[in-house]
Length: 149
Image (cartoon, rainbow, N blue to C red; front, side, top):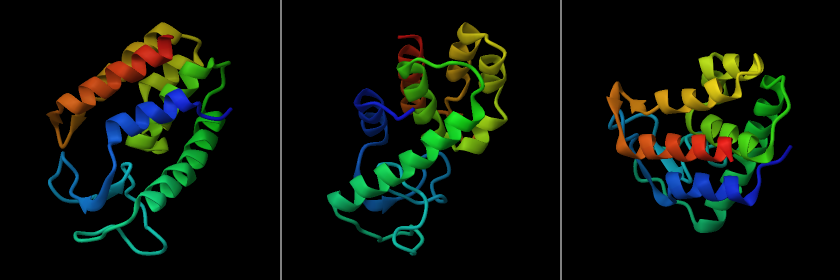
C-alpha cells in the first residue's frame, strides 16, 4: 500500500514545514528538525542549528521518508488494512519512528485483530520528554479518526 493524499495532508498539517532547523519541542534540543518533521541527514549533513533548506528539498525529504515508513508499516502489520488505517499508521510511524510502532501495544492489538483497541492506543502517544503536548494530542486524535474512517 501507499499513503494517500489524505494521509500526506495530515502529516503536513501536523508537522508543518520549517525551512530552518528547529529544536525538538519536547526536549528543547535534539533531535533537530527541518522541513516536514525531518530529523535524518539532509544530503549527507546532519540537521543542526542554523541549517536551511528550500521548499523543494522539504518535499523531497518527505516523499523519501514516506516510502520507508510505508514499507515499515506493510512489514509490521499482519492484518488487512483499509486506506485510512494505513495512512494513520504511516503518520504515527513518521512522527514516532517505526521502532516505536513495532514495540507498541497499538501494533500488538492490531495484529490480534482488535481494531477498536488499536485505535484507542493512538491517544496514549501524546507526550514528548514526559510532557503532554497539545499538538501531539490533536495529532493522535486526528490519526485515530482517520484510522476509524
